Amino acid sequence: MGSRSLDRAKAFADRWGFQKAYGSYEELVRDKEVELVYVASPHSHHYEHARLCLENGKHVLLEKAFTVNARQAEELMRMAKERGLLLAEAIWTRYMPSRTILEQLIDSGIIGEPVSLVANLGYAMRHKERLVKPELAGGALLDVGVYPIHFALMVFHSKVVKVDADALFSPEGVDWTNSVTLTFEDGKLAVLHSTMLSPTDRLGVVYGEKGYIEVHNINNCEAIRVYDADHRLIAAPPVPEQINGYEYEVLSCMRAIAAGQTECEEIPHAETLRVMKLLDAIRAQWGMHFPCE
Image (cartoon, rainbow, N blue to C red; front, side, top):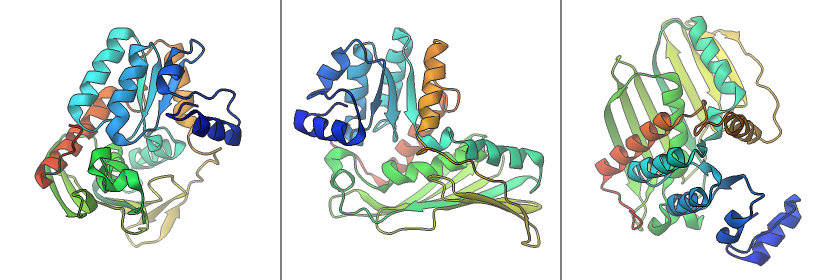
């Protein structure tokens, strides 16, 4: 466990049973026994801290949003490939078994051809410092808005040809709440919403010609229900129990490292970069820029 304060690091390590605590990130990455570093600092520091790890020969599991912008993401990916190190995005919904269940249902044709989807995620979080400060790359989009976007891209795979976005901003200039519509090259449409002002139902719904699929809690799937065109429940496959949900991304990293890979198959660099470019395009429409850019 690494922190900028040894006391905080020790307290966290004692609470959760870590064997080691480091009073600086530099001390952590110099430890030759450390193989993989999970970076979960504020968005504004993802690039800096991931770069520190890569420069010191450490594999990296980097929290979402991956970086502040696509330019930073591309630089980190270049560094990882040059050094033969794993660099993976810690967007846990990409690794969870519920993703495979949803894909199998869609591929089975149970709802026919998917034509559109809606997804939302929100929590009452305006009191959290890291979310309200522009210097920490705050706002709803990079913190919770990434989940509806990833949900849409896991269902629809063609190129996004149009992005329409709007937002309500805080006095500090970060998005409190937002609405994003993605139009895909094959004519599909995704309508997405995220907010840090209030809880939402966290629902994702994929609509097809013969019915629709509900994903309850797109942040950490609790149930999947399939309905026919007459709104009758026709399937409800069980979602596997989990330890805490994070185990799937860690196991994926372990497999990738053992295979000498620089990316995880569940979320390859190209897909992470696709998301980052969408986030850049959305913020460009709003004129929302961060001091760290």
